[in-house]
Image 1 (cartoon, rainbow, N blue to C red):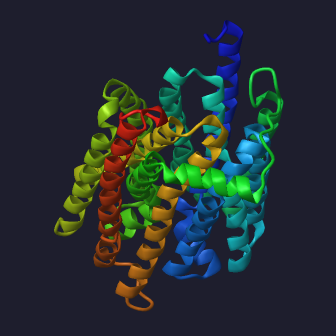
Image 2 (image 1 turned 30 degrees about the vertical axis):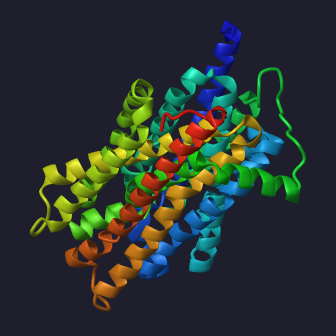
Image 3 (image 1 turned 180 degrees about the vertical axis):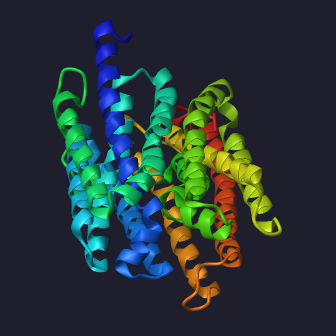
Length: 427
């Protein structure tokens, strides 16, 4: 059924406000990236302990994806989006004043919990308010535009820490959360003609059925491994280790490191719509595109890590541009989830898929911290050699992910050939 002009306008307004909520979630998620060295000094912690901030945040985010997906199918996106915005605001407000390591970990738990409720809700609103032919493009635009939150957590946050201090910077971040929460409460509706949408009651049997049915389809697993393999390199740089890597590992100034992280985000923003157009033109080769992107990312990292001494600026620029493409490439995984699952369990499928990249990022963040501590003498700063060892942990994850993408693709195509009504062969 064709959208009326009024509904088209409502869809754009609702999407715009939901997009601002996601942008803020990315900002909160990334706000520690340029504060890693300040956090180490403030709390007197090691590299492994610093990595624990992001580790805890990612554990909470990834661990909540399935519960959030199930709750989304039951209660609708509006309610969960509002709860997520409030929880993140409380987390940032707490982080502004806490000066103990344990308390700061608790604040990051709140940030991770609120963040976990946001993107999934935005995807559900897109699927409800826009016609199916536009959903891939709007989804990519959402993922790309939302990454501007990382820009706001790079250069402006670097300036704020230097000129305003820790407490004022995080108070300002919490204030932004209040503004977005009010906007979402006033504007967002679950579906045309209804502020709230309620699905079937949740029971243990329904949970087992929805999760089992979603995961049993190889198309959902193809989405999971697509998200797992493409996202972690960009996420790890943006969330924690990019700034220390460029400053300590490649001898760049804090300003140069901030510029490189900004270029990473610009790459994300530009690549998203381009990938949406490519996958629309060639839907039967999406997994080929995904695997090609992963191999290109691995090649760019190899060039940087084997370069004798500090890598030249042009090579670091190439690295962040190529790595940035992995962010929107991970969104292709959600296309598989939407394509191979009915609306009643779409939230569960999205939750399963959205775990992938964050579990991979979690593993990598921890691995980098452990390797840095292992390769750095006690009491010394992290060395370029230590960072080369640490960043090499990515190759294990790329190999695992590519192998499972290949396997899931073959199974998906066999499944669709046998049961055509469950999806298309456009993998």
